[in-house]
Image (cartoon, rainbow, N blue to C red; front, top):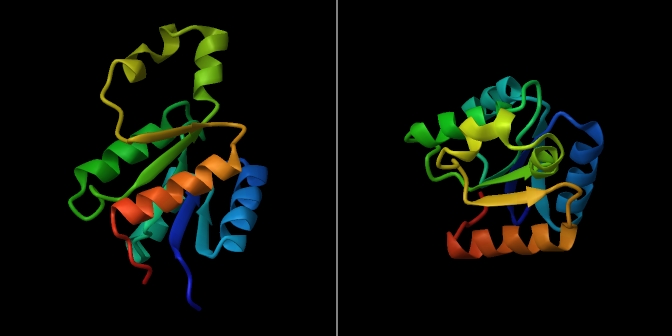
Length: 139
């Protein structure tokens, strides 16, 4: 099967996972999914994706950040493009920055952050731009 590339979607919201899969596959990408960081690490041990979409808040408010930091410290995955998906910014607006200061004060482990609900046209454009900039060749 010839695809534009392989994307791993990591999110604990089944609706986000299903929607992401439909959108990405209908645009020519191969998709694999995980519902948490542990599942993602298991999948990553078997096959490295070209890009990862990663939710910030899953089992904990920082599970996505924790996984992204871990991957950036691993030589095999340090250059893996990761787009974080989050309702985190809305939660900060609602609850205030106090509970999240340790995150907000850190250097974030990703370059790209998309707020939920996702703007799929912007997300697809960003994925295409990342693939072009990093000269990602599927396979």
